[in-house]
Image (cartoon, rainbow, N blue to C red):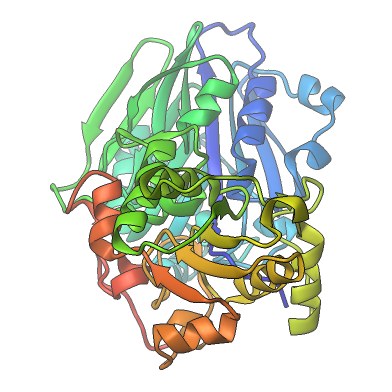
Amino acid sequence: MEERDKLREECGVFGVFSKDVEQNVSAMVYYGLLALQHRGQESAGIAAVNNGVIECRKGMGLVGDVFKNSEVREMRGPAAVGHVRYSTAGASSLENAQPFVSRFKLGSIAAAHNGTLTNAEVVRELLEDAGIGFTSSSDSEVIVNLIAKNYRKGLEKALTDTIQFIKGSYALIVLTNNAMVGARDPNGIRPLCLGEINNGWVLSSESCGIDAIGGEFVRDVEPGEMVIITNEQVLSFTFSERTRRAVCAFEYVYFARPDSTIDGVDVYGARVRAGEILARESPADADLVIGVPDSGIPSAIGYGRAADVPFSMGIVKSRYVGRTFIAPDQDAREQAVSVKHNVIKSQVNGKRVVLIDDSIVRGTTSRRLVSILKEAGAAEVHIRVCSPPVKFPCFFGIDTPHRKDLISNSSSSIRELCLSLGADSLAFLSVEGLLESIGGKTGYCLGCFIGEYPIPVRVESV
């Protein structure tokens, strides 16, 4: 069983299109994927256009493990798209690694997709009935086969027909022999942005990917927008009726890198503000504020600033333990947490400590951290969580445990949860506080917190 004490993002997408046909952009995509590695660590892939042929290489593991320098240099061409994956739809296996490439009589396409299609099974059955085969269990291959099926209508029409047929969340990059296309679902649940590089353009899940290759952030791709990039021009049009913007709030809580900006909101600033608001909502008598590395640190800085309590680096996270790892049972999960985190005893000994975390899913990490802090001499440990309790599953590209495994979904009160974690007190950021931290009362998906989703979903299986 996989250790799932944090919610997991499904993947990240990145593409570069150069107007210079002599330029090799695969190395840029490689570095862009390294910047997006936090969004998926199970597999990585790059597809590049070279002399009218799309070549794809992908494998299991981190970007640096899948690609060697020589392999990246060999993937020549002025346009390429890449993907890092954490599986939520389809098993963790090489056949489900992306990008997916489809070759057919009229040409070839490659596609990289972040998100989850809520009608993938229905669309897959229709395509199979039409004689189209699948090589994977990923819902992303559904998109590629739909585009290929409609390609005789032309690229723009094929993409429009495909996107209007699929439902759910997606940030999508499609590569053809002479164009790169980006599209974002009508609610904008998953992020996608546009950047500019010398003689070309960049599409990325997060702005930090554009920064990594020396590009300039231009803007976010709007919900329901398609951007078509060719040698001649960049076209933009809206493919759906205006719907309610519902950006995933968890991007700001945990998923996105703190140096990214999503839909005009600075992620680092949002996390600091969340800590400040949490200090206002749930103060604690304490001597020290520490954050759970890495995503809890900005909020801990904000909490300490607002509460006028010193912030310190009280917990060290091993840089050589992956963000996901295998743990077959509860004892192994707890042991894995102790390998990943260690306490700086000189900082916490004899002190009342506020421990700031971004979220609590199963409670495994929080319980272990309280234990090792008290073993290191902390007089008290007060847990403050910079998001509301996670009570409901996600259907749009986040790997959420079943509701029964979500610690905040139990019938236990906050006080009972606190006792089960061994803490001296426990408090969560309110929904209103979260919205305040990201700058608005509307425009966000809060499904995992309140159970209300921007589009209809099937809830029988959760």
